Amino acid sequence: MLQLPTVIAEADRKLSDSSLIISILASYLTQNGGSLGDVIELYPEQRTIAMETGKEIISHPNMYEIMRARDLSKKQQEDARIEQKWRKWVDEHFIHLIVPNVYRSWNECIQMFRWFGEAGQWDKVVPAWERYTTIYLGSVAMYFLSKKLRK
Image 1: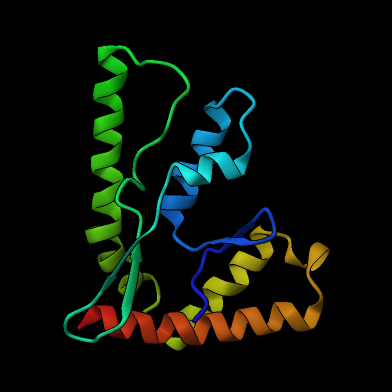
Image 2 (image 1 turned 90 degrees about the horizontal axis):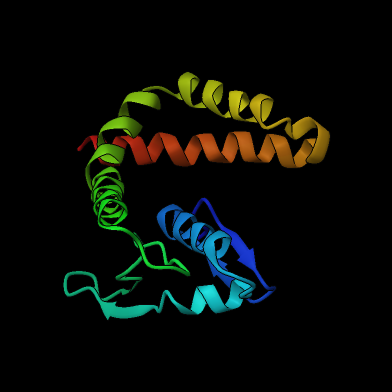
């Protein structure tokens, strides 16, 4: 199953968690000359099996941390800790509140994805068939996800 957002890095590495993607890109920007692959290696996968479903779960225990090339001051360390706390809160709590309220009806789902297309100027970079597929399949996915999260 495709998760969004998804980033394909260095042709063979797929990253599918927005917090992980943000941490990796922020870490990459603070590194002095390291490759993106080197930074990705700083975020090892942890594979477990969910007891209730038997499905494999892939996680990255340090996905909220930004790896920096230099030491941080006490103030910067505290700021980083607070940032990690809030990023985790958004993933674990806020998203469950916002999605059902943004995607309340089928029409709102379509409206939101059309807005994404306009704001992202998809018409300039994405073929029409792909834009419409994204708008309608994305709307279907978010509609059902919002219903699931509402419960």
